[in-house]
Structures are given as structure tokens and as C-alpha cells.
Image 1: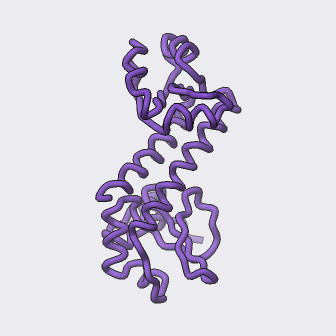
Image 2: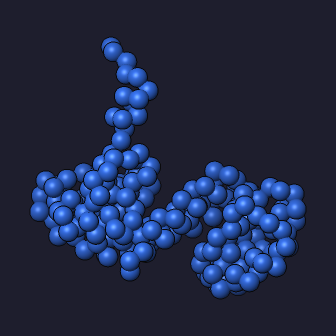
Length: 197
């Protein structure tokens, strides 16, 4: 059997965005799975949904282009009515849920520290890859007094507190580079999907 070159293999794994038409790596695109029973598209954030799929950049512009130009219908080979704002809202919710899942798993595996005091200690040791700050507690991140490579906002103090059985939680430190990268990617997708709303 003939083996392909690295470039041929990389090109074969590329996918085309049905919005802008550009080719990209599968990880850079969001797959929407088509459910033939409901005639609806569902964002496949974790890549686990079955059924025929269509790929688009997780960006409001590409969703809008795919809807206006008939990219979804063409790719699925059937007429399908798509509301880009509805798809965007579903995808944003999916990415936010992904962040929640990553936070809970990181805490369970001792890859996250919760609260100001625990985070301050870890920041001094240089083991923090990402600091998540509740959106209604942005002032707290400035009080840490230690420079961190990645700081981003997510949720409210009440929302984060409920995730971890507390009344409120303003700060979460992520100790794993891999988990931090996945969280940052999901939050970047939420932001890109929210543009233009």
C-alpha cells in the first residue's frame, strides 16, 4: 500500500468552511450534525454526535455567510432553513458548557485551585496556567499583585460558586497547560460567535 507524504496526509484531513469557503484544520472548525428526524442542526462541540455533518468556522460571520449563501443546504444536499443567530446561540451555549465541564474535571483532578488565598499561593509558585475571574469580580484580579500569563473572565461569582458548592466564587486558577488551552479556545469561540449580535 502506498503511503502518503506528511503534506498529503495533512491536506487530506483539511475541511472546508461552508461559510467563507476556506479550508482549515478540523480543530479550527465547528461541526454541526444534522438530525434527519427533526431537520435541525446541532453544534457538535465535542465531536461525538452522529449523523451527517457540516463544518463552519465558529464565528458569527461564517455562520451568516453559510446561511445566506446556502452553504448548509449545499453541503447536506437538501433544502434546510437555518437561522444563524439561533445556531450561534446554540454553539455559544455548547462552548460555555464545555468550559464548565473542564472546570469541574480540573477541580476533581486537583488541577484547579479555588478562591483568592489558594490562588495567591499557587501564583507565587509559578504553577498557574490560567486565572478565571468572575465577570462581576474583575477588580479582584488586579488585587492579586502577581502577573499571570493568562487571565480571562467567565460567569458570575454566584454562577461559579454554585459549580463548586459555594455561595460565591470570584477566582479560579487552572494548573494544567492543556486544560487552560482548551478553556481559552472555547472562550475565544464564544466571543467570535457573539460578534455582530
